[in-house]
Image 1 (cartoon, rainbow, N blue to C red):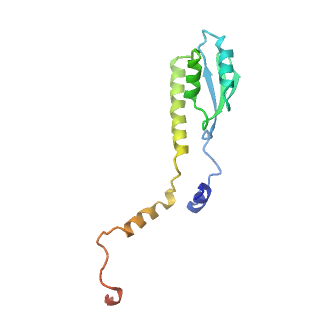
Image 2 (cartoon, rainbow, N blue to C red; image 1 turned 45 degrees about the vertical axis):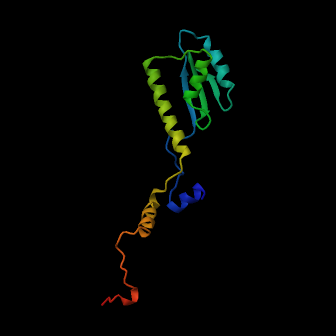
Image 3 (cartoon, helix red, strand yellow; image 1 turned 30 degrees about the vertical axis):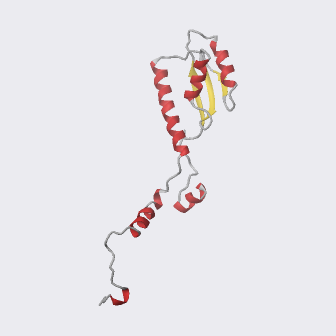
Length: 148
């Protein structure tokens, strides 16, 4: 069954997605300010990736745009570190990158899992209950039951 068909059956409407919930991400990567010459090398490394757009920002910052379906911030950082580039390791930037990594990992995992139809989930339990021998069935044939 198509996801759209399941949404219609469940009565869901997804015309207004949550803000920031899209797959196109715009992030700021800050390189270590002590070596400003590494910005050009970092732009070349990231621009070589398909689906990644890089623009130089203020000082040692790079403005990076990518789809979370194709890339992740952790992967981009790993590629920069493999080239010998040093990211800013200040507490603010470390915490920010950790939060972004967590949210992207969660979003990627959720996008890969099938959507659950919560409004019709009771049908699963009703169906299982009907086929489970739970002892609540009257074994007397219907024509012999004396409902009076």
